[in-house]
Image 1 (tube, rainbow, N blue to C red):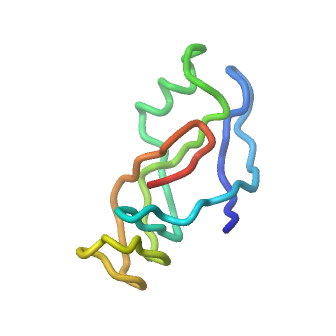
Image 2 (image 1 turned 90 degrees about the vertical axis):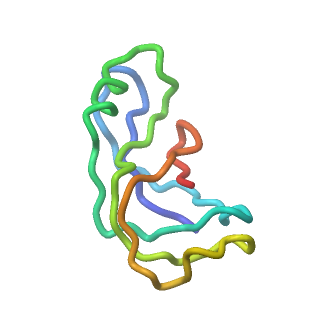
Image 3 (image 1 turned 135 degrees about the vertical axis):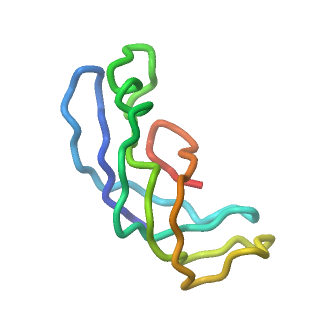
Length: 96
């Protein structure tokens, strides 16, 4: 699956919109199709830090609909509307 993501590729550089690969969710993960997401102030600090790995994906506060559910997930089902914060698994913007 592919998705567009706001990324900072190099420290001090602009945000760019790039298409990234979204892996299938692991057994304890879900995939959410975001309708909207926000950048928290902690991420603004990370953008300014030269020590943070790049590329850096932004916008972990979001709302959307669950599209894929890992086989061990029991508390969420497909097509359920979701909102909250996600955890990005790495600098490429993969979300869990």
